Length: 321
Image (cartoon, rainbow, N blue to C red; front, side, top):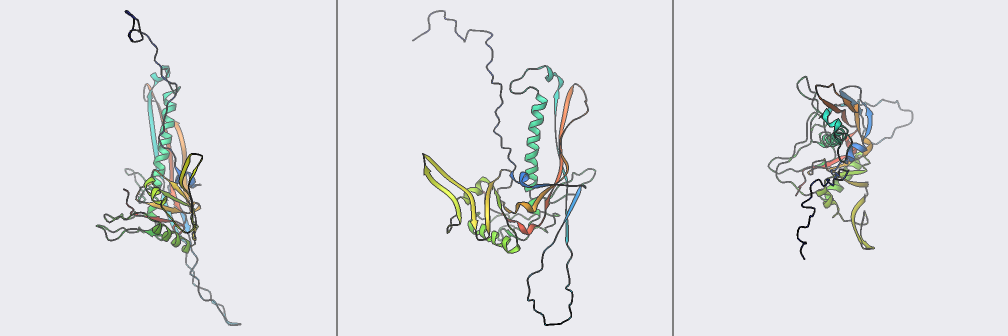
């Protein structure tokens, strides 16, 4: 078939209006499971401190009738602290935007401010998971918070025998973990169960495991004697393969895939033993005009609080491919 001679079709027409949907589609990940799960506590100083304590080990305890009582030597609490970190993002938009009619948003400044607020939340999640030592900061150096790996020293699994051995940090946030170089090993059920047992022996009650998508696939291969609650079934044309809850003699764990932690690290945590100390809650403010434009800033200042690292554990130096 062919067009009749001199057909005036859409290719010849001038002035056809554009067809642009009045919506913007964005599937970028914005979940922050660790940051969201952490209790938010008030920080009143840029160096936020807390104390930890522990019971002594059990001992034989028998006495004769009428003997004199002697007090035991007691140990002091441990005092720990972490620096607040300033998270700041800003956007500047020419005031010409006020006169423009746009698809998908009424005002560019509002749309971009919402974007940077979501991006900042991802930055916070990344900082909480980072293997980073705390930094006091000064007039030319930004303060930095110590991330979760810098606190964990009791219930840990790491690689030795590579080019560089892995090693635990001091445990007070002043230094980071030493990452193993070479000889990394695969995340396994054996490693997981071993760290779970260690946490239980210390008195911890972990409830969540944070791990990357790659390591989550390793967890999906866990097997056991009625201790795994996963479902692999065919029903109504559907096939499910997921790890909802993993049951061990040492406790029940929910697996939470995360995008912002390093894939080499797997965290087993007792949620109520972690908190975020907030010095300044997230705030969106307009900055002074510097010309024919509008600038808005989103700022948050907070730190990570590890209430007692013995309640959690880390499986470090896992292969990631």
